[in-house]
Image 1 (cartoon, rainbow, N blue to C red):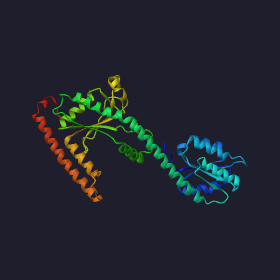
Image 2 (cartoon, rainbow, N blue to C red):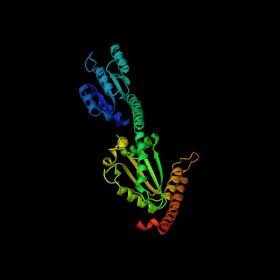
Image 3 (tube, rainbow, N blue to C red):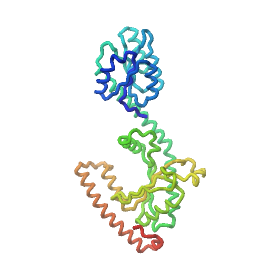
Image 4 (cartoon, rainbow, N blue to C red):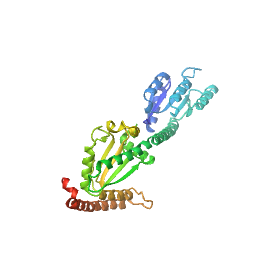
Length: 362
């Protein structure tokens, strides 16, 4: 888990002599300094609150010729090799300087003499160290998530294929027109960008593969609203899928009244008693898929709007004013499409023989 990057742990038997200035200067750099006068107390706090500690200021020697800080550095680095540690030396003796240099070889970020130093320079050094720490953590997390993505993607691809097959069977001979299916798997970049975007609002997300259920997405495109409504009812009446959050019958996230974007969303996984006892489905336990039902009219609107609004086309470079105009124009287009959609739906209802068994959806 990413640290809060604002807590500096200060471990020094003479911490009280520096805490006043460290607190003031540290605050000006956005840090909260916590002091402990023994190694044991400092390391105990670090062990319990590692995710909140951004760096450690560690005294080299607490008693003459007994370099407790060296052993403490080794323990810190054993538990978290990335955590930046700056050693503080009480003297400029040849032995102390040699020990400080050895500490850097053991992973210390740097060392600073306490007899004559500038607190502002020290905290500027800490700012650099913490920034590098943050970047290193993010790089490791990116690598780990990418590897997990690679391990999971085959199961999500199979889930996409399986969901389409099941829906074909559920809808067979029950709709006026066979819908079109569009499946997609989020690229790792898209998945990772979504994580970072959500974390700006929600804070750190420990398990994004559980938090986000749309790594695999299946869009089902209908030619009229009657078929779409009937498909929703058929899906909810079947027992092939369960709702990801509730673990029971699927529940629609009804966006049918959202202008242009109108759709029914379902976050589903396979119903284990019905499907997962079969060998071919074993790898799909708890693998999720987002199902999206929409008419071809709403699909056309959202496809074009998304491409233009999010500048997916290389030549797109809209100013703020042009973006506002685009939004207004597409809002007006949505109204026209909704009107045409209603006309087509009414014609289907009026003339298609299967509508005799389908109640009015309005």
